[in-house]
Every structure is written in C-alpha cells, then in structure tokens.
Amino acid sequence: MNILCPICKNKNKLKLATNEKSYICSKNHSFDISKSGYLNLLVSKTNSGDNKDMVNARSNFLNKGYYEPLAIKIKEVVNKYSPDYKNVVDAGCGTGYYSNYLKNSNSSIYGFDISKFAIDKAKKLQKENNYFVASTSFLPIEDDSVDVLLTVFAPTFPNEFFRVLKKDAIFVLVVPNHNHLYELKKALYDKPYLNEDKDYSILNSNFTLVEKLDLTYKTNINNDDLLQLVKMTPYFYKTNPTRIDKLDFNNDELTLDFSIFVYKK
Image (cartoon, one colour):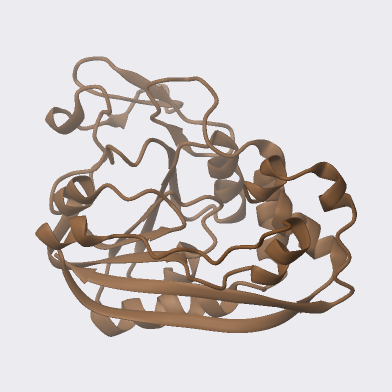
C-alpha cells in the first residue's frame, strides 16, 4: 500500500529519501523517520492528541488484559467478514493494542494517530507494524487500498474512510455502550450518568451496517490499575482531584460495556 504526501494529498506518493532518514515526494516535501521508526506526517507540528502521561497510563492498563476480551472479539468479527484481509488501517490507533491482534502472516498493519507519544509507544511495542503521526481526517494512503478499517473510541470521518476502503471492505467501529465504567462514574460524580446512544446514521450513505453486537462483562480491579484507567481518560482532567485521590475499589467489580458496529462499503 502506497503512502501519500499529506501536503499534496492524493497527487503524490512518498518514497524513501537517499539518506534513508526521511521520506520525500516529487514536490520535495520531506518527512522524517523517528529514532523508533515511525513516520511523522502531521502537517502541523504542534503537540496534539494524548500526552505522554495518558499514553503511558493506557499502555500500562491495557497490558493488564482488562480489555483483551474486546480485542479478541474484534479479531473474531474481522475474521468473520473479511477472512482474507491484508491491509488493515487503525484510525486513531493509540498504542496499537487492538489492531495488533489482527496481525497475521498475510496482513500489514497501518496505524495513524495525531499523538506522537502514542505512535512512538506503538512503534516501540510492535516494531513490525507501520505507524504514522497523522490526522485521520485525511488518511495519507491511496484510494481503494484497505481491506479492514478499525476505529476504537476515536473520531469517525465517513467520507475519508469510504475513500480508502476497497469495494466490499469492512469498517469496524467500537464505542462505549451505556454502562461502560458505570461504577467508576458513581465513585467520581454525585450524579453518575449512562452513556447515551450516538447517531451514526451519517454512515448509512456510504456504508451498509451488516452487524451490531454488544460486549459486556465485569472485572475486578485494584486501585493501582484503576488509577491508570482514570489517567488514560478525560475523567482525569475533568474531575476534582480530591475525588480521584479518594478512589478505593479494593478489587471491586467494574463494568466494561462496548458496542461494535460492522459496516461494509
């Protein structure tokens, strides 16, 4: 799969420069390869996305396996609807945790995120995968080149996702369901709330919904892991620090509740 210049967009491909430390297009737009091996294609070089502390917290939490059932379910869904997939794009990939479960002998994983800290962590954890600092509002890849597009808890850009997917390829969207982390919300807020259903009807003009499934389970969690979970979410910055300091789950149960939408182009 060819990578496109994010400045020229769909007009020029990138190729490895003679110095082998950057990629360059025919218009001489150049993009550096980091020490860890990812390519920074973000046109604006200001720091965006998750910061270093959030990324480290997410990596520490995910490594404990709390969300592994979700990763396994995503893999099952992809194998069901696209058993011969090759090119996988993870849009808003974070540390690459979920799409790495889709790695096999025939597939190539391409992860995109605006956070350079997340992409750096992803590349260090999964060196064989391809990671890029880039906005998913423009995916710097060719039209009709992707077999599976995955986005987990990340913004959706229907027209852009439609552009890069092959005919009959699948788009897997994962969002929090109603009761996700409800016990945590009860501990943090005086008036805990259920997650509301979001309207994804905008996707219907480009995609056909072939399946929607829910995954709900409970897990016991200790205080240290719970703090990592809080730090990796907006709760950490939107909540009174005193409430966070007083969190005491003592291996209490926590509800993990997800909705998985499977669309076909």
